[in-house]
Image 1: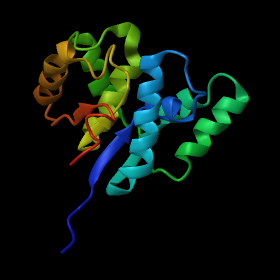
Image 2: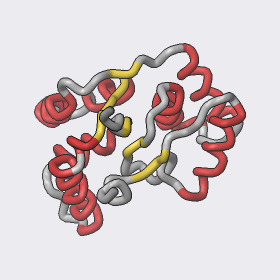
Image 3: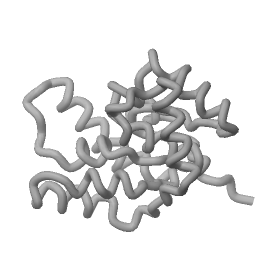
Length: 160
């Protein structure tokens, strides 16, 4: 029996780093390079998923850039933002694990959690892949009966 591939929720920042013009900021450029390498070498080892939140965010801004982002995720299954997802996202904000001004970030975490993702892949280190916030995020998810995914960057999911 074949082992199940790990399931990865691709948050919007991954798609943005993958498709953006190369940055002149050395750190951003390094993250872009890691993202491209992960996409080319590690992606086939996982089952990838996005959500309506990712699709909505990737559709914003410059039309040509949005088209590149949407093309990058074409064919990746979309997870539904059910009432359970919205409820957990609301709990993440009301219980102060995620600030209310970062609602979309709470919903990214909620959709990955409710749908049983193994990983949430992101470069959003302000509110998602944030070590100082991780314990509170995990506590809220578990309090409401869910096991949260491992939240990480492509650099952290490069080997395995």
